[in-house]
Amino acid sequence: MSNLELIKSIRTRTNLSYKDISKAIAALDSTDENQIIDYLRQQGILKSQARNDRETSEGGIFCYVHEGRMGVMVEIKCETDFVARGDIFKAFGQDLALHIAASSPKFVSETEVDEDFIAKEVEIARERLKNEGKPEAMMDKILAGVRNKIVKDVSLLSQSFIKNPDQTITQLMSEVSQQCGEKIEITRFVVYNLNS
Image (cartoon, rainbow, N blue to C red; front, top):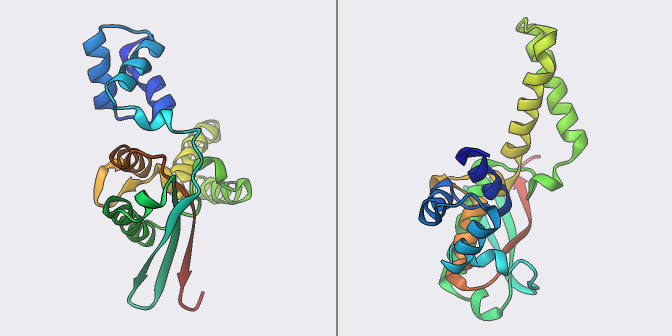
């Protein structure tokens, strides 16, 4: 397995940045995935992963209204009322509501993306490619890439954060989780548009 493949594999399992994973590989001079992940945990970089099985029964609902024409409500959960009332959690909630208003995600995560929605979008892309004269032999390969891009674009957790495009919402949430010392999860959101 090449270094790049190793980094991609660890990134898939942990949602950490390429930079953090590369540093761990260099520090250990190892290609053992589990050893690298254990090292990341020991360094505190992967603390949030250890919190994944904890229950989130507290949290808050955050809102953003844009010029009275569009509104967003997002529910974010955490483990304790103490964290829910803290400035870091509240700032995250406000940033997230603003991000949703600006980026128009349709689903929280990639696993929630509706297959009918994707099928319709892929069919539209297929017609567009036909009209552009793309060869039929290349169509399926192109559409597989289009499908993956659509899924990422409409999933909140996969989107790049508007205030820091180098960071995904998942990475931001992990950072907030580390700062708060608790599991944080985005459970749902709704967007209201005037006259729609």
